[in-house]
Length: 508
Ligand code: HEM
Image 1 (spheres, rainbow, N blue to C red):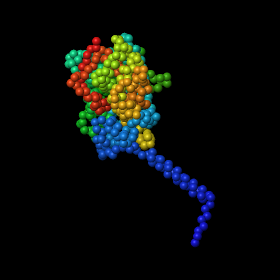
Image 2 (cartoon, rainbow, N blue to C red):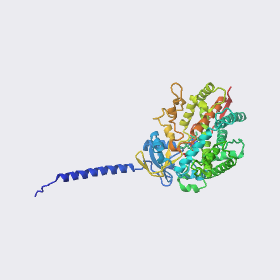
Image 3 (cartoon, rainbow, N blue to C red):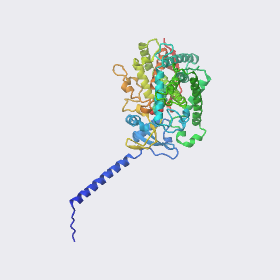
Image 4 (cartoon, helix red, strand yellow):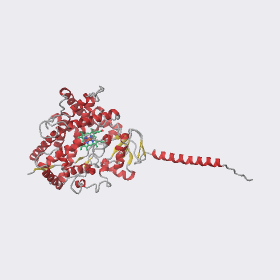
């Protein structure tokens, strides 16, 4: 028996329409599933996750992992999932183009005590009130940076403080050299930088023998030695309750620092004069008293003023001194480069004191500083970020609240951006006329970028320039003959050189 199939045109059309619909749906579902895949990454163990795979230098281990998993990969630090972001383009996606989606900070145990949890830099809070806080802190720094110098020929109060402290450091280097021959420059350099920050925040410098000042510096050093952005207490919750030094040091440090700062801010309230801003604390009080034309509540509470001073104090203290430790080490390790900087200082500044404004004329010196920042990348990661909402990055799903590590070290050593990236070569930042290639300088990633960018970049660069040029104008730094210099960093929140000694000779 034969069946005669009679199919009408409308049935054919309906079948075609259904098939098309199915194909489109399969495609959409396919795309959706593809998008909703988490980033790839290495297998992890229970409890410790991938912590054991990080070795002594996590930034370098991440560079190896990138070769296998690409620019965006996921691992588990202890029990916490962390997305590591590498490659300039992907870093720009996270910090600039999708900046708002990644501008939070994760809840981390070691940062939670800082400024009693109200810190601008570390607090988990992110939103309109945080943005206002950052805007005010930035305005206070700017308005203080323009405060007039008291007496000298300096262009502003900040320059006056920095120049005075740099000259004091030269004297201390000479004294230590006379007393001991060879000496470790790091302790005294930390005192110098801490004093600049004290002047910046409280309008006051401390005697290098002041007990309170010294104990704060000591506790700071202990705290930094014991912490890093892969502190187990941040990633394995029960580590917090163990009597391990890393955890105890954080408690002790924050308590002393918080008390020290709260006391200074209290003193400022009693002596505040709105017509004469002495420092950043005064600038913050002034902005806070300024209720604006609509008569609304002050934008910053007293608590927030204390926490902001805390932030600026903490941030300005360690990063600048660490940069100087590296600078001294590289100068003794590269005597030819030291001579070139001295020749530039002699030719462009001569015997007068260096000033901020000289930066625009000392191209080689500026190139040297940029190369130090790039080559050492002594702050290898930004402060950890947090995804403020579910986001797709490089085709992968990043769930809300995921912790994000941005590997700045990788960007600064990427062979596709930097020729012979591992070579230390200040000349890479100069053009054929010996002028600074500013667009290349801007590619060095050390202060972060976008919403969470460092507030102190200008202050830090001015400070480093004045200290470097004041020292090299008067002194020659030399390594000790027996010293085998080791440039391998000791990993931490900011990476420090291993202990070393230098000798100094007065230039004639
Ligand atoms: C060479 C010196 C310095 C370096 C390399 C440096 C680098 C950084 C980096 C990498 C961040 C994190 C950016 C991010 O999380 O995306 C940061 C944040 C910050 N820095 Fe600096 N910094 C330096 C000096 C300073 C100084 C002198 C100050 C203050 C006067 C300062 C104030 C801050 C503040 C307040 C933040 C927090 C910003 C936020 O969370 O939004 N820094 N800095």
